[in-house]
Every structure is written in C-alpha cells, then in structure tokens.
Amino acid sequence: MPLYLVSTPIGNLSDMTRRAVDVIRAADVVFAEDTRRTAVLLRHYGVETRLISAHEHNEAARARLVVELLTEGKKVAMVSDAGTPLLSDPGARVVRGALEAGFEVIPVPGPSALLAALVASGLPADRFTFYGFLPRKGGDRQELLSEIALSRHTSVVYESPQRLEPLLADLLEVADSGRRISIARELTKMHEEIVRMTLGEAAEAYRDVEVRGEVVVVIEGLPEAPPRPAAGDPAARALAGALLDRGVPASDVARELRERLSIPRNEAYALVQEMADQS
Ligand code: SAM
Image (cartoon, rainbow, N blue to C red; front, side, top):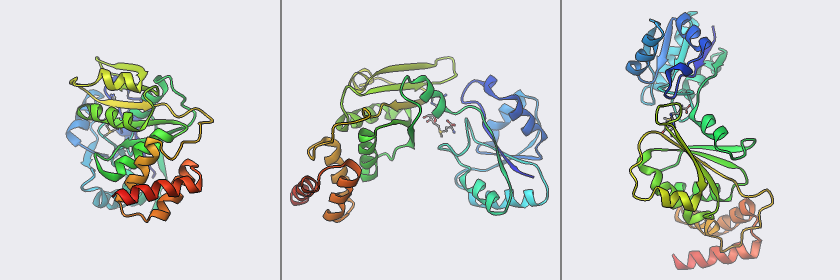
C-alpha cells in the first residue's frame, strides 16, 4: 500500500478535491497535524476515518508508526492543518521513512497558499524560489534577505500578519524600492485580498497598520541581465556582514561575494577587508 499525501483547503472548504475525500474515506487511518481541526473537515464531508496526530514534535515516532501500519497492509493518508503537507508543514520525515522502507508515496494535489499567491501575483511564475518562513532575526535572516534582493527570479515568502511590516522594512534595506511585490492575504476566504505594488509603496502602506489573517509575500526578481552589483551594494554589504558575524573567514566571504554576486575579486576583497577592519 502506498502512503497518500493529501492536500486540504487553505480556507474555503469547497476546495477539497473529490479525490482527496475518496482517498481519506477509503483510508484505515489519517495522520493529521491537529486531529481536532481535521475532524471538522472530515465531519463536513461525512467521513469517519480514524485520525492520529503527527506534528513536528512527534514526527519521528509517527514516521515509524506509519511504516508499521503500511507493513501491515493498512491504507494510510497524511494531511496537514491546511494546504499541502511538507510546505512549511510537517510530513518530510514521514515521507522519507515510507520511501526508505520501500513504500510508494502518492500525492493527492490540491490547495497550497504558495502556488495560489504566486500565480495571482502577476509576477513571473516560470522560475521561483520558495523560502517558507524566514528566520526571525540574525545572520541567517540577513543572508536570505540579501539572496532575495539579488535573485533573478521570483521569491515567495510565508509570513505572519504581525511580522509583515518588519519583513517589508527589512527588504527595503537591501532591495530597490521600485521592486514589484504582491501580498496575498486570506486566500480563498471571505476577506481575500491580493495587492500588487512596489516594495516602497507596500512598506508605506503597511506601516503601523494592524494586519489580520494569513499572508504570502511574492517578490519580483531582478531583471534578466541585471547590472553587476557593485561592492558597495546594500545587499552585498548585508551578505558580507552576515557571513563575517557568523565567523566565516574573510577570504571565504570574499569568495562568496565573487561567486554569488559576480563582484570582481579585488572589489570583493576590498569590501570584506574594510568591513572586517570596522568590526
Ligand atoms: N501547507 C500550507 C500550504 O500548502 O500553503 C501552508 C502552511 S504554513 C504553516 C501557513 C502559512 O501559509 C501562513 O502563515 C501563510 O503564510 C500561508 N497561508 C496559509 N493559508 C493561507 C491563506 N488562506 N491565505 C494566505 N496565506 C496563507
């Protein structure tokens, strides 16, 4: 028996596919991030399949249980609280465990806030990077913000409503204010809102505003043939600063600047030297 990975609605219950309902109804057991929440969904569809919790704190043990059940020939499905499992949601360990034990993993596709926000953003969707939630602070956050600012393709970020304002402010530190972004809020729900504006406008519009609901931010990439960033570019400085703070040796930081940003060797060394001297 395969393990079925079933996508569930991200707000609007009608987005559950018929196949998702059929698979869950036919399953012997459904592993769910929050069984009470999934019970509401199952009740809506008149499904009474047994639910077992599988969340980030018990996933390793649950992965073993999933393999045990599959070995017994049971039909096993897995869902997360909303959308597609594994997308900033649990499931990765369960999938790995099932595959390593020789079982097939079959997706039952459906809603995901990532794809819904991306395709409605008006920004190129042919190449994109999904970042999930960025770290809240520190060098890793800085490094990823720089990567987004310097990326040639679209970036997609999940964010909590309270942290939208700091995200936009931090992006504005490293990226051009004219960069186009889209903010998708409460997708598929009654108060759905998708705004498309520049980064500068968005930072202004969401300053000191109480944002409610769930949010996805989609950020335009740099134009296809971007001007080579100069060593003084804010994103280059931010990247160098984040790496130096983390204790990466100056020569390696300079190499990163060369390789990731195509900054000429002598300029990269000069910048790193200057920043290392200041710290
Ligand atoms: N697995 C889910 C998926 O497939 O999209 C995402 C789970 S992640 C824990 C939750 C985050 O997804 C939210 O903080 C928000 O960034 C985004 N999200 C989920 N539902 C959303 C919705 N209806 N509208 C906008 N963003 C949503």
